[in-house]
Image (cartoon, rainbow, N blue to C red; front, side, top):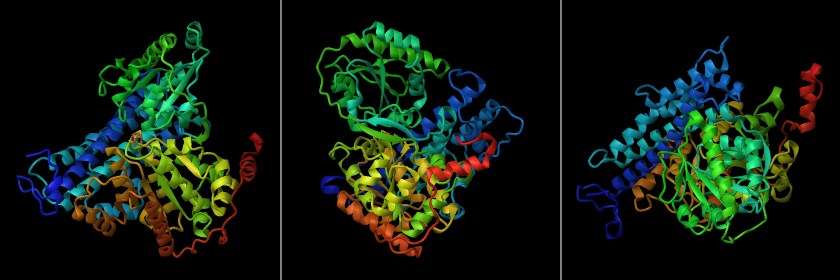
Length: 611
Ligand code: NFS
């Protein structure tokens, strides 16, 4: 009588459980539960960010300030909040309250739905998948998947799309926007990637997890002269802050803090024997690190009441005294420096990386402050310089040699003139491989993509941030539609989303909201619904008919590549764009170089001179 999985001899489409639930019902039900869990993780993170914004605005969390007022005002506009004559704190308070209300909203539509292309919104309304409120969709998914409630695979799978939209167009998008407002909207930063960033003669503190609030405080306190002096007193030359998983992506994008890597790198950080402390909060944290740490001097420090761990030290994070908590963790790390005993495994190589491509910066880089637009990108696609765009996102998975599929695909796409955007552990993989530099374009990219990257001075693989920042990809594709020339909906664009080494429920939620937004999505590794041809048929055919997007699980990397390029070329065909041929392009507007852009900006601000 459950929890239900039909496996072994029962893994046939006609098999049933004791209650009569068929295999497709059980497969769809479990799938919906996973998508709800992934949505819950991203959205609960977003809720914490919203409360931090609220308390920053009211002064109850005095260590947090509003850094990006322009973005705050823009967001207030989207939320229909007036900004005239109001202080930024006053606006921020109302913005935070409005967003907090979206979690518990019971009726209507979550507010960011209106940011999607009009045609997309109509499709969602037609099929009844507009989320009402974030928590409501998650709770309903948990209810429907209880024993004896929703018994129809199609209905369960439609619910998966609705709950996923509460992630992409609500929870994750809230989190990205608020994080930018509090800590700054990312712009490109040069840094390094690999486990080789650990330093022998400094106190190494690894910040690992997902919510960036405490990690941001750690960035600040690790530069305080008192703390640096304390480290010197203990015999260290300095303090080396090291990022891990999505916390790494957050502090890399905003401060250029180097990244040690993604999900499967966390035990390696301990095994260097150089980590004085690994500070963690929530999500993707292996309990194994506290066990591995027993063989070294490393202290694993949990900081969230939601995420405690056996054999870890717990120092409770509190946003009301955030810097003080960060100092406490840092002092513990510094005190631990003298305890290094066990020689670990070390490497010294690191790769250069440029990260920090927020959607705002992507727009800016294509035309400067006064002509920010997506026109050059759309034109380059229309002309065939850029064949299409692929998002390579998601996790590492112990079933796959770490990063192997991320790296293989990234290299092949770039070679084939496909622009790559990347987030999460996919971005960490590309960073460690050294793919995220403008030079990569010269070495690896096909002729058209190379020309575009050279003109703008960007890598052919753009680091868009953490996994909640997949919402930035939604904004980018929406802006591409709005810019014109590539159809009138996301489903028209020659764009594919891929999670080649996925393992987390969060990845499934992301995959589903990309599909519901009209994209073809491919996951590598294993399918959680492999046993049910009916459920696979819903994901591939019914979803495509209704939503213009589909979800497919393809374990072979070569097959992922082939199907992606076919899909991109198919979309180009349907848009009646010129056939992609390497090295042969149509006419398009001239791309602006950095020098052109500076001239233009100087002309627009003659009194300010050239910046
Ligand atoms: Ni995304 Fe980031 Fe990595 Fe996967 Fe985990 S760290 S939130 S879930 S493993 S990409």
